[in-house]
Length: 112
Figure 1 (cartoon, one colour):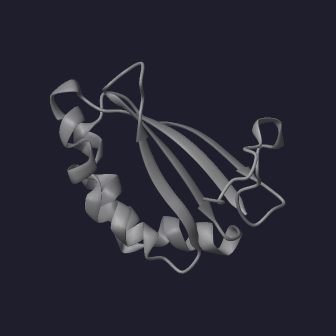
Figure 2: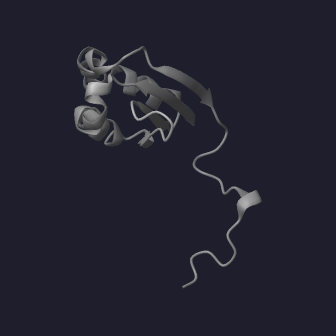
């Protein structure tokens, strides 16, 4: 899978509205057949920074995402809300989803 993490520094005056500003792009991306996940989190240290964790099934799915109409629209509509160009880590991982963090295993998880 293609695993991507990106940091988005949003202009402070738009930081609280970023989930709504990026909502159409987020929803459209999540609906792509090759999208495994597309999840935003807000930094605890900087309220104007959002972290996007996304994954796509394979190179073909990643390429389809970048060529999609909603991605092309986002390239035009989202940058005016940003304080800087997003920073990204993009890699290919030989797995199909999340693995458990064994070093912090929760005993009896899921048993009520």
